[in-house]
Image (cartoon, rainbow, N blue to C red; front, side, top):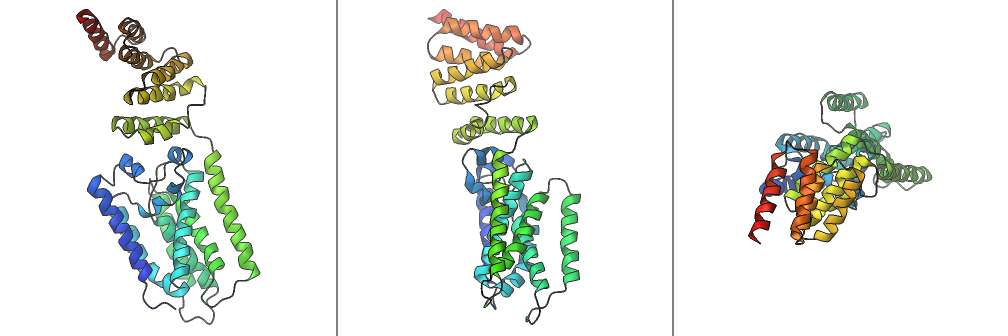
Length: 339
């Protein structure tokens, strides 16, 4: 058995380095920052960022979140590493962590990050060892271990904002993986093959369901809000990936996505393309006043001031109390007068 839990300490250092690096350039308590650097965010996974099924394992929301997870890893990691050996320990940790993220992807739509799924995977591996620990050098009190697992799960369910699906997914993954990799010097057996097939089916099932699940109106609005912040920050690639999930839906409720895409293209000086999306938004929802205002900008930037004035006037008719529309009209009229 491995004497020094080297990988446990390396994993802790990696998590600390990642945390410090993100704090250096941003704020780990800021949702947009965490999404930018790899947190689980469904619209970006749907948009092609499959690697977000792995990266959340190494990200943490603030120093308290990091401290709690690393403290737990510091205490239970060495035991799991000594029991299973370094290579098996790393396999359990990483794949259980992915299983936790995949479970969260399938069940929850919220932004999430943290090593807790991988850590619960270590709990699962310890529980499996407790069932087969006859004639082994390291002994585990199963009743104490089960109590510790229950307490940790109860804390998760009692506190808001904690991703319990990741905890449970990671725990199940760790238990199954411990059976698959088994202990050092134990030959691979038929039952391990069936467990490996089961583990693969669970992972594929979680990921498949995550890619095909329906999202609520609130999820859609969150996606729009996040894309809007990325547009404001001139990080257009993120916004484009998010919006790509909504553009094929012709339901009037999704007209805002067409409008955001049009605005995104205007910010990239793609005026004609932007105008097309804004026109689509207006067709889907003729009362969407901001779409007229953005379309007016597109017309003005293409050199048609008269059409820009007509279009922003329509925005004013829909929402006469919004002063920015009136200012926009006055600017166009002033610019026309100078020509």
